[in-house]
Length: 151
Image (cartoon, rainbow, N blue to C red; front, side):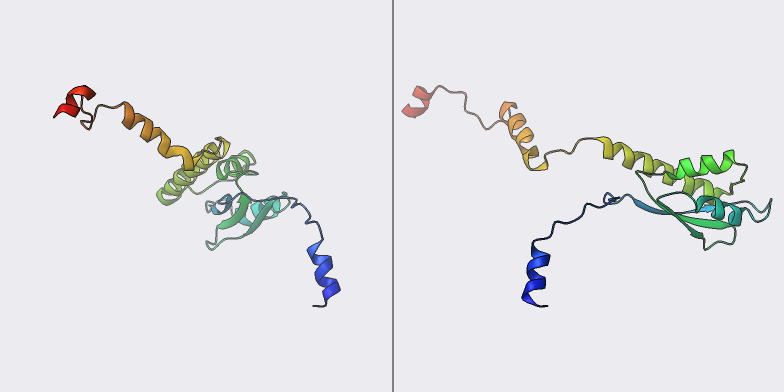
C-alpha cells in the first residue's frame, strides 16, 4: 500500500450500517410442516423469501425450511402464526412442540431483556457494601470509646 492510499483510508468517515444486528439476536430456526397437503415447504419457501431481512432456505428435513432472521425484526412465533393464518399446517409432533415452546420462551425472554436499560455492573458491589454496613454482623464493639481505652 502506498502512503497516499494509507492517508485516504486513515481520514475516511465510516458509513453507518443500514441494519446492525445486536449481539445474540441473529437466529436460525427450522420450521417443519405436516405431510398433507404436500409441497407446503416449497410454497412457504417461495412466500417467505420475498420478505425483507429474512433469509429462507430448504431445511435439513424434507418437509422443513430454515429461516434466518434478526430477533428485532421477526420472531419464531410470529412467523408460525403468519403461516398458520395463510393455511399452512405445521408439524405437531412431540419433538416439534418441545422445540417450539423452548424457542418461544427464549425469544420472549431475550426481547424482554433487550428492552430493559443496561445496568452499571461496575458499581453493583456498592449495594452490598452499604447493606453490610447497616447489618449487625458482630464485628462492632458497643463499649464506649473511653472504656475501651482504659483496658
